[in-house]
Amino acid sequence: MQRAISVFLPFFPAERLRRIARDLPPERPLALTARIGSQRLVVALDLCARRQGVYPGMPASRAQAMLPGLLLKESMPQAEARALERLAFWCARYSPLVAAEPPDGLVLDISGCAHLFGGEEKLLADLLARLARMGLTARAALAGSLGAAHALARYGESRAALVPADVPLAERLAPLPVAALRLAEERGEALRRLGFETIGDLLEAPRAPLSRRFGREVLERLDQALGRAAEPFVPLAHSERIETKLSFLEPVAAAEALSGAVERLCEELCGLLAARQEGARRLDLLLARLDRSTAFLSVRLARPSRKPAHMARLLIERLGELDCGLGVENARLLASATAPLRPDQIASSLAGRQEEPDLSELVDRLSSRLGGAHIFRTAPVESDFPERAVRRVPAMARARAMARAGTRPKEWPRPARLLAHPEPVEVTALLPDYPPAFFIWKGRRHRVRRADGPERIFGEWWREASEIALVRDYFQVEDEAGARFWLFRQAGSGGLARWYLHGFFG
Image (cartoon, rainbow, N blue to C red; front, side, top):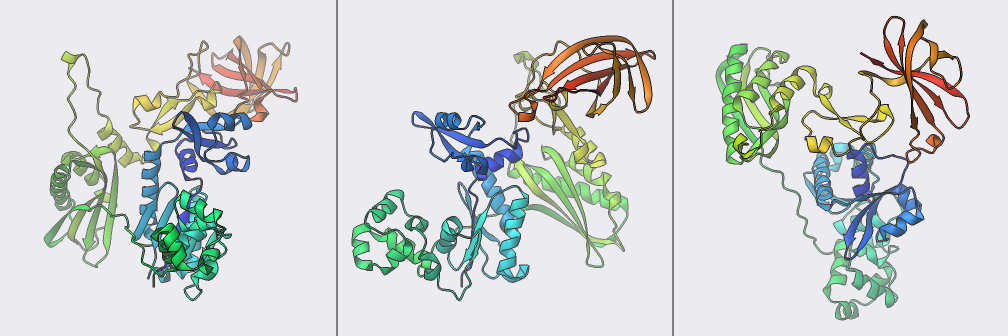
């Protein structure tokens, strides 16, 4: 008996964009637009925009006029389809038979898999909980047919609908509208004109007149939903895994022997990668010990690579982390993540174009020693507030992507070191608008000899309503010891000004 889950992600395109574009204000509603014909229409939106009256198909100009704080971004259908497919592959933890239903759905055939998770109810709850932790709004239904699960996930009353195997599907589907049968829009409109509002109305009607009037589509979709007719299901096919294996005549544990084996495995693996014009993004080394256990080592690469010397060096540097026990019987090397890697045109100085240095190998070595989270670059962000003016980007981010959100040139210099959060200080000034005469920071008193300023920065009211009346006046000050500080006086709607230390020069 088939058991299927349909997952409905009504706001997936917008929520995907929020996950990858962290600079989007979370409090502002978001809508994605696309040009259809001569109009720019809303094609996707988030929950906040839906609650405030925006809907798919609405002209973008009308949506922005109705909701002035609405963020409008361009829809990227291909990127959204790839992201949905990656999410479908992630769902393979529940079943090997998974498929994506663009633009906002997933399908899982879990026949024979539910007992691995403690039953169907726990499997469904775990799936929805994991999607919620990803920041995705999801509805799901589990039923005895793909059509019934699809209908209940999108038109049912419950966020997690479960139809037991012994409950007739007709009983649960009867109250749902005919649109739940995945009919063409014109077919569903024709049925409604004739008075067929729900699936129950179709179940009570004679089948022969329906077939003569609407053809086979209506009855075929109805039978598929009720489980009376088979429905083709084409799961996503996992790409063939690229791996090499080396067995030893006798168990080995010496570092020299393992290093030689790793070098040989990398040579063979790069040959397989070259044949498919791919490069490895992640390498997994598995060593089978004599006691039938496995030692595991994983290495990530900043860019696709098939250079055996570089790959072997990364793995050999970390062999000391592995416990080989009484010895290793065999070693396997897998390229668990790959990407296309085709020959590139070599830059020539004769053509006036210099070849950019490749820092990927340096980044890989630093990441292997220090951890990937500690290797990054900073990119400018369009903001006057210093703590918002930069963001972290991957170490190998392209210069074009880093500069797409540049800032305007500053007339005032910026400190060499900036505090993560401004720290309050006690300040004495001759007059309220004057620079400080002295200030106390962390219990130490600093008398100011020289000061320059103020540089006034206004609050970014389009980000937060609390910044409408916010004003900062920055001063560069130097104390008697020659140390230079960056202080600012901040005043808000309450009128009370407070002083903060934000950075250090030199």
